[in-house]
Each structure stands twice: as structure tokens, then as C-alpha cells.
Length: 234
Image 1 (cartoon, rainbow, N blue to C red):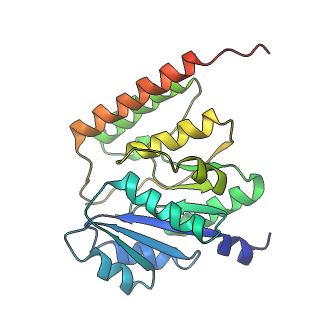
Image 2 (cartoon, rainbow, N blue to C red):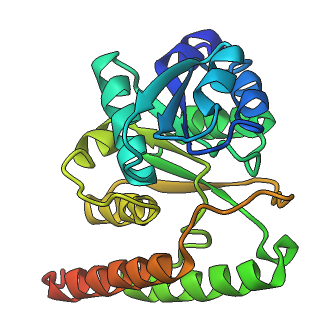
């Protein structure tokens, strides 16, 4: 597949909530590589206007429903338009759009159903480094295979994986964990690319207590499902 044809078959999807002062640069940079759709998840600021100023397409989702719902809204639009894959990145500047070609090259080389941008935890602030390290251990234990970065929102999903996720009820950040679980359960291929680890002065929209609660709910559900599956003799 030529690079031009491949870029047309992949949609860049940016869920955004109150990121008016950052989304313009992210969406503008993403548009240099892929058609770009911003889902404004009920922002109370001027996120939509700034996203539109970048030249990206903007869909306003009201009221605020969570990152998981925003992603599925974008996924449905991508499916309706015939895209073969969707690349997701955050609006807060933590994901460098200049690294989009890394995902496209990996997808073209192996057509994995899920390609995740893997960060270097050592470059994170101490609290986030600890949280990601513990989360990686717990989720890998539950899934039964090592997952080096389950929290990174910089990822590329194939059309068939997106289709399989349309019945999800996860509303928040835990939807990104469910993507990995679903991919593994279906026997689809997961691949990784190394990305920059960027932390600036962004304000997290994660409610820490609720996020931890929902994450470990996903961990426990994943563990139970894996143990309930019949073991296949090799």
C-alpha cells in the first residue's frame, strides 16, 4: 500500500475535554499526516473553536460523557466512512504527532490489530512512574502476558478491533484497558512502538480515586475471565 493511500485509510482521532489552549497545535500537527477528527467531549471552554481553527473536523458531544464514549463516537464515524484503522492521540500535548509515521510504518509492516506507543516510565514524574509501574505489573498478571504500557492513549487500532469494541459500556479511561483485553481475547496481534515520554504543565482530567477503582475492577475482571477459559493443551 502506498504511503498516500495508507494515510487516507487511517483516521487520526483526538478526544478533547477543556484543552482549548493545547488542541490547536496537536490537531494541526496531526493533519500533516492524516485526516483528523476531534471529538469535543462537552468542554466548557473554547476547545471546539480552537480545534476548528487547526483545520481539523470537529464533532461536539454534549454533555461530557467521558473519554471512552468520545473514542467510541469517533470510532463509529470512522467505520461509517470506511477507514481501515484509527490512530488515537491525546489533545494535551503528551503525544507528539511527529511520531505518527512510527505507527503507520508498524501497521504497514505487520498489520497488527493494536499498536501501542510505549513510554519510558523512568522519565515520568515520581507519582506517575509509581502508578504506571504498579499498573503494568497488575494488568500483566491479570492478562497472563507482559503488557509494557497499558495506560498510553497513543495507539492505532484496526477496523476489526474497532468493530469488536462497539458493544463496550466503559465510559472513561478504562476503555483503553478494555481495548487490550478484547484484542488478547480475540487472539488478535498486539505490537508496540517506542514513543517520547512528555510531561509539561498539563492538568489531568483523571479523578484519581475513581480511576484507581475502575482500573482494578478491570484487572479483576480480566483475571477472572482468563482463569475461567478452558486451558488448551499444546
